[in-house]
Length: 241
Image (cartoon, rainbow, N blue to C red):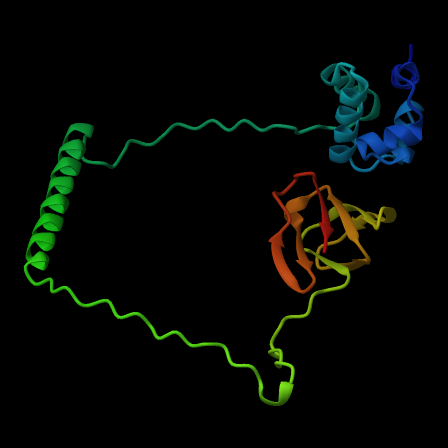
């Protein structure tokens, strides 16, 4: 059985359509169909495509490690892969003097704690000699006064306005793949390049999924929320009023 047929057969056994699988996994139907048809050219870059395979296999209850390995061999058999670099080194001889050992450090810490305790005790003792109790004076009670002439009390002018829409500005410092749904409908799917900004406005909500959360900053209704996450992290969040 072909690799993609395993996915399709298992999905059909569970009674899911591609549309239902998309709603459950949050992976676009286009990519799910490409995996089942082994049409790997449609998929996004390797780091995102591999994540799709893991998530889809987990959703179908299949061996995600085995399917991911088979996917890499099928889709990237002719590409050099540097998933992990192991760096070995020989540590240099420590420049710390021999007398600075654990025993001496522990003794110094104990001495320091005793000195701090003694200092606090003396300060408290001598301070207590000059304590003079002061009578407690309660502030006068001011009765609220109604405005003259039956006028309505004026409201302060500095009450901040409550935003009536969800405005999300995405500012990229690195290239990042985005999927954006506004009020439940897909609005954007693609890459945002370094130095580029995109704004998304919804009546009720803006759903954002980023493939490189550390490469973008989020500004929500004018407030800078900072970096969305870590570099290389796939992160999802829904912004509402």
